[in-house]
Structures are given as C-alpha cells and as structure tokens.
Image (tube, rainbow, N blue to C red; front, side):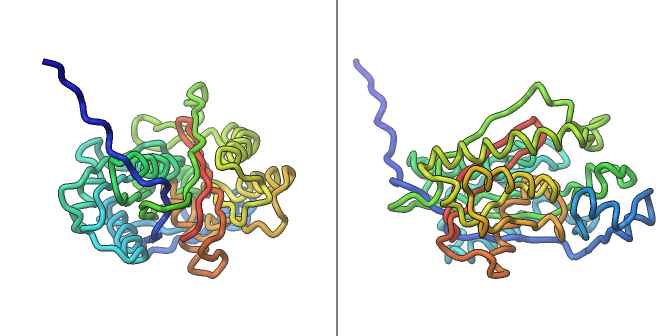
Length: 326
C-alpha cells in the first residue's frame, strides 16, 4: 500500500510586528556607585562605553519574571490575549540552568497554554535570530502568532569587580508579537557566525563572562555594517530607505561606528540611531526590542517607520533584518 504525507500547511504571505513591550528592573546603578567598588570613574565609563547608568535586577528577580512582564506588555500593545498566541520563543543566554527552558515557563505565567515553546541562545544576536525564526514559522504555516522575548539577567554571570564587564552589562527584557500580514513588515534575516573568534567572549570558569574588549570592538566596528547592508539587500532596499537604525546596544562607540559606516554607504543624516545603552547598559538579547520600545515611547520613531535591526555577540554570532515599526 502506497503511503503519502500530506502537503505542508500554507502560511501567511508575509509577517509583521504587531506589538512591542519592554521591562527594566527598579534598581538604577550609576557609574559613581560602581566607582565605589572598583577602579573606575563616571568619566572613564562614559568615555569608553557611553553608559551613564544601568538597571540591576533584584536578587530574587529572574529571567522569566522579566520576560513575563515584557511579553505581557507586547500582547497588550498588539491588542491580543494569551489565547491568540500559539508559539513562544525566548532568546536568552543567562538562564541559571539549561533546563527547564524559559519559554514554557514564560508562556504558562502569561496564560498562554499548551503552545510550542523553546529558547534560542545566540547571545546578543538572539532576538534577531528568534525574530527571523518566528517570521518563518508564520509564513510556513507552523504558527499563526508568535511571542518573541529577549530577556537577560547578566548580573548573575558578571564578576561584580571586573571593570571590563561589570560597567557594561545589565538586566532587562524586550518582546515583540509576530503575526500574519498581507504585505511584508519583516524582511528576510541575514545571519552568520565567526566560530574562529569564540575565545573573544566566553564564560570564564563556567561562571563569569570574559570579553576581549579590543578584539570585539574591532570586529564589531568593521564586520557588522556589512551584515546590516546584507539585510537591506535581502529586503530589496537601499541604505537611504532606513528611518531608524537599532543595533545591539553593546557600546555607544560601536553603535556610532556602525551608523557612520552606513551613512558612508548612503544612509540619511536624519536616520535615527538607537542609543538606549546610555541609560540601560548592555542587556544582550533584550537590547534591541527594549531600545525600539523605548524610542517609540519617547516619540523618536513612529508607526510605519522602516527600522534596521542588527544583533551581534558571543559565538561570535550575528543577525539582522528590516522591520516596520508597529
């Protein structure tokens, strides 16, 4: 007897971001506070990474706690309820243990029951990886609406007196709801990796993040603008089409270098560039959705603006895509 497999389901012709949300812990940590426990100063930190303050989670506040807050806000922003979502993806590299994953817990606590739920670990590129996967799931018919969360508690994995990392990393979460659209609101993902540079960012003694700052800086300032240009090319767009640039908030000097390279390739002088790192620090996979949500709240971007997202970090992994601001 001949057996055949039914053809795959047909998905939406395109996808879009339907809503955004973000969350930051209450505790604000200034540069002056850090200077009390390590050899640094407010001016030294501002000059090297551009950060003025950042947020630290409470000792009992978890990656899942923050993801739930950001995800719930994204659902509300999209005008949806928990029952409207059928897949949850959490991008994170700071869960305290490999199992259980963050996504299933996040989904359950929001009230999203019996759905596909999994984590993605591409470090600071995680949100862009997860967003690309969510878009493909909806277009492929596997999912209808996907909640994508980037959530990190980096203070759990940073040596509090290591000046090379403790001044940079912080905690928080950002989220987006991805759903069907008649015309594209999320472009194809441009992603890749440089595994030969794995030793530039890794977990020292399986406990604390180690970063070879100068090597990472050189790599990011030279290699990430081409990734952003690849994402534009895949979407059939030019640098001059970009209204908003939202790079991973790794370091203000890196953000400014990427913007400068894109402007040299034709991006407009009035292109708005995210600088959320100044008051949020580096929140890894949370930084891009959190920055975009903050910019929208401040009126720096508007619904329908064309935003270029590009994430990069440990792995080394990188990814980017063009999206329309909801």
